[in-house]
Image (cartoon, rainbow, N blue to C red):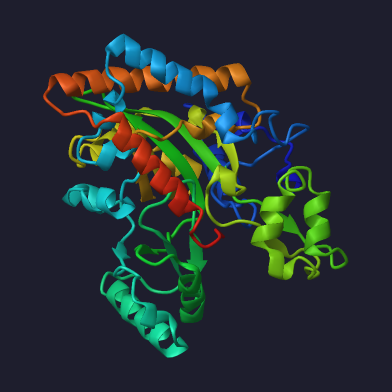
Amino acid sequence: MSNYVNSHSVETQVERPNQSVQTKKLFMQDIENQDPENRGLPKLELGSKPVSFFEFWPAWFFYIPIVIYWILLSLRYRNFGLPMVVNPHIDLGGMVGESKLAILESAGEFAQTFVLPCVISEYVVDDALYKSDESLLAHVENELTKAEAKDITLPLVVKPELGCRGAGVRLIHNKMQLVEYLRLFPKGRRYILQKLAPYSAEAGVFYERMPGEAKGRVTSITLKYRPYVIGDGVSTLKTLILKDSRASILRDVYFERNVERLYSVPKPGECVPLAFAGSHSRGSVFRNGNEFISTELSEKIDEVMQDFPDFHYGRLDVKFNNIHLLKEGKEFVIIEINGVSSEKTHIWDSRTSLYSAFATLFEQYTTLFKMGYEMHKRGHRVPSAITLVKTWLRELKQSNEYPSTD
C-alpha cells in the first residue's frame, strides 16, 4: 500500500554480524515501531510497481504450464500421483481435502507448544438450529464453552475445517458475530475456533526434508502485510481505496469485504484495515523474505516439524513478534500447516519476474516427485488420479459456499 512507503530498503535493516549493541538496539526499535497493522515486519516499500503483471491472472490460465509439467513428470516416473504420498499421514499428502485440525493435532508434545490452540465444532446439520435466534445462540454458547476449556476466548478466529486460499476465515469479537457467521455457513460442515495469536506479524515459512535425510531446512519465507488506508477526515473509505496505488487495483476484493462501511468517512489519521486473513488471493501484500532465512530459524523449524509424523514438505503459516526474533528462531506460533499443494508464496512478490516464478514452481514439483518416488519405494500406496480429481472438485465447490473472508 502507498502508506507503507519508506526511504529505507529492507536490506539496510538486516543486522550485520559485527554491529554494536547500540546499533542492534536501534535495529530492534526500528522493527518494533512499525505501522499499526504490520508491527514487527520490515518496512514495506511498494515503489512504482504495486503489483506484477501476472500477479492476478486467472488461476486456470496461470497454472497451465504447471499442469503440463506435472504430466511430463508423471510420464518420467510412470506414476501420476507420487506427490500425494510425500506426507503419508495427511490425506492425499495435503494436496486437497485435508483437515486443518487433523494436521495440527498430529503434532507431538514438543511441537504442540508452538501450535495455537483450536477446537472443532459439531457438524452443522440440524435444520432446527436455524429456526430461531435462541437455538443458534445456544449452539454458539456451547461451542465457546468448549473453546474456553482450551484457553480460547473472544476475540478468536473462525474458519472451515476444510478449505483453501483463506476461504471463510473471520475474526470474531463477540457471540453475535459468530451467530451471523453460522447463518451463512453451509450445513453438513464443521468449523474451527482458534485462539487469536499474540503477535500481528505473519509469514509463510516453507519447509522441506527429503525422505531418509536426518535434517530438513527452510527454503522460503514470505512476509505477509495486511493492507490498510489512512483516513483524512474528508474522503470516504471507497475514495481512499481508489486513491491507493495497490488497493485500487484490488478494489473489487476490498469493496466486497468492506461493503457496509464504504461510504463512511474515517477520521484524520485513522487506520482502516482492509483485510484480516493473510492470503494473497484475499488481498494481503506478499514480500520475498528469503534474506531472513538463517541457520537458527532453519534448525528450530526442523526440530518442530520432525515432531509431526513423516512430514516432509509444506508451508507453515506463522505469527511472530518481530522479524529479528523470527530469524533467531524465537517467539513465533503456528496458525496453520499446509501440505504438498503449498507454494513458495514469495513468488507473489510484485518484484518477482514471471520466469523466476515458474522456475520456482517447476523446482517444487521436481522435488515433490523425487520425494514421492522415494516414499513409494518404501511401500506407500499412491492414491489414484480419480480420487484426486473428485476431492479437488468437492473442495472447489465447498470453498465457494463458505461465508466471505475478513
